Image (cartoon, rainbow, N blue to C red):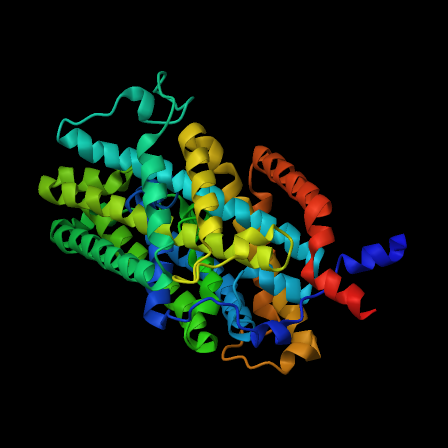
Length: 475
């Protein structure tokens, strides 16, 4: 093959029409309610008990809720673009599959590999946080693990730590739940999400009676710049709604239900963040909220310690749902990439009983637990944000190319981004702007991760690509 032909085949696009009508083996069992609870489960984790206090104390003061509103607007632009893609191309793989259809294989691989880092390192980071919260609850009963098994080696303040045993156990347990079937996993997730929302509402209901109006003054001590700076922090509290679109092939009526799941979960999460922020800064002066656990601190401040214990339990439940959704999303992403031949076929084989990619699920869980157990959390989180923003940016600009391609105009689409092409372009610019705000170390780590991915692609994926082999057989 000439170099010119080889280069051109790097950008071969998926035949979406063929894939839409092909039986994949995945069971269609999820409803709009399942997707909304999945989205809320991914978005509303331990962060809701932490970020409002940080934003109020360091950036926005009593106007912290406005930072969440601004962040929600930025996220909603990307969510609208995801919704149009998911209703037009309701296939597993989320942004990876969408970009494969619009920009071709090479760009799709780069994006898919970046998303693998988002899901994999999100699982690891959340598991490490879950372990810390869980051990705090155990400490309340005077139960302590040996220090060697309490955290990863190199964790600050724990010189004798070697292995994070609780993080390993929770990831393995959730992996076991996921291989039992998507319907059963969704039901357990829904129960935990409902419990989490009840805990948040309990805090709001109790706290509203202890609001002191003087705590809202001055309302914007850092000005509008503080609101925008706070929004940059709040943005990352919303990450997770994109995991909903990875479930597209397992959803009943995906053209309608996937957009409902994405937009509905983002709306519910925004309401919860705003309500909790307003009550929190009303209970305690914003200058006192720069603590690791501002919600628990506020409850101790008003002498409602019994609610504080419940909130700690709610944080653990919250992180459990985040872990489950990111584990699920990551396994479905790897399934889609493997089905296209870019990763070994073993990762897309389904259990005949549960219709779940078992090998893929266990491997993803083992890798996630390995990183959580042996790498300190501050190192793990470096790759999460940039992979997410890269995906948001590509999906946003991808809508412009989707609309311009007459092939996709023939497909049914239950949702269209309003004010096209302005909103997709604005979303793209905002996501790139936030990427440029990330630290140099994050970019270096990102490029190292991409270099590893390109090595895998050119040594395995390029030769085994289903799309490329089909193209050559037709020539």
